[in-house]
Image 1 (cartoon, each protein chain N blue to C red):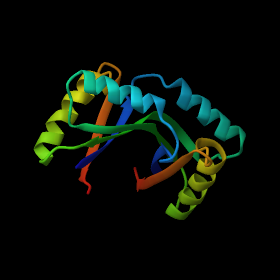
Image 2 (spheres, rainbow over the protein chains, first blue to last red):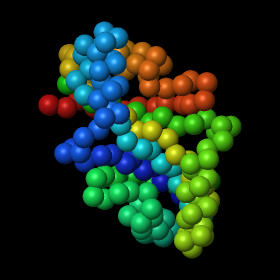
Image 3 (tube, rainbow over the protein chains, first blue to last red):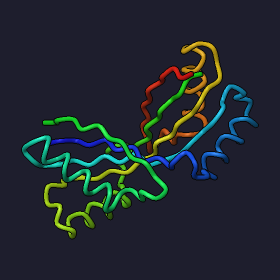
Image 4 (cartoon, one colour):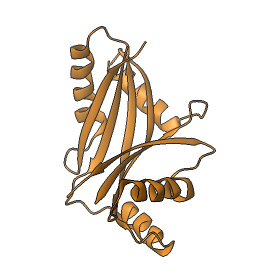
Length: 83
Length: 83
């Protein structure tokens, strides 16, 4: 079994109103050290396949087809074997 | 400057309808190897502070106070120095 941990983030040029709202709120709460907040998605996908290559190729396809809007978003992942 | 990469996930006992919907959809699309999908948040916070300790203590406070609902969610993070 393989566990994929996928981070999906808005591209830098894309406006992030949710992140901006949190940023302002933190500033109002007195966290003056906070420069920037960006909010994305974190997705765990568990694969019941034999090899890392198999998991990776399915994951890449799933990301592009279902999980990620590649016009607006980037993604990256770690793939770890689990028992 | 320090960049925190925070993963916020629902606790295992908490029902995840969004994850389940994606799981079913992937099954219908023919990805039979997918066992489970869980969906959480990924948050990047940029700190303009001098030391790692300072960034870490602010981040921990911010997570508990603003970013994470500790009744339902877990969080973990990596903290990396950036220029």
